[in-house]
Image 1 (cartoon, rainbow, N blue to C red):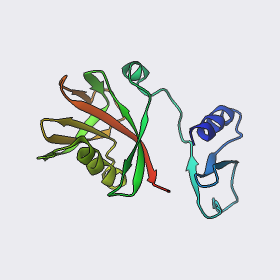
Image 2: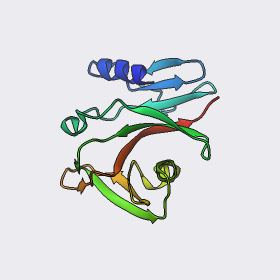
Image 3: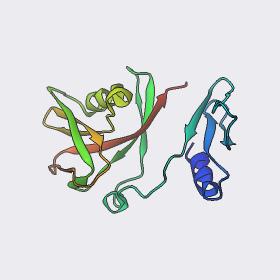
Length: 164
């Protein structure tokens, strides 16, 4: 998927890509150009369509020392998500959605965010001392978040159905 997005992002500058149709099962992607008059996209079964609305660097200085993103499976949701764990203590562009007390594991905290990702825009977690704080991305850097050293801050980059 990342390779498909990279190709589309590169040729988008020349007006040659409006989005991609991607199939995880067949490991194939199709580059989409302008559609028909009804703005309809017809897909074969198993394909997902993504559009690229805007491409810009996303807090690259904050993310510079982070380890590469990793995949985590959430069996209870039957999903797999790509996560990025943050090393900096001062983070910009985040706003609290809610706090969930008595969360005993990091996996439980991450599952809580993945479960409401689409409905409430949860895209990150802050986990410390059995407290799970769910966060959403904000477009402006005046929203900031300061985390403690003995905590975990992770961004859920994307989630998709876990196809076995």
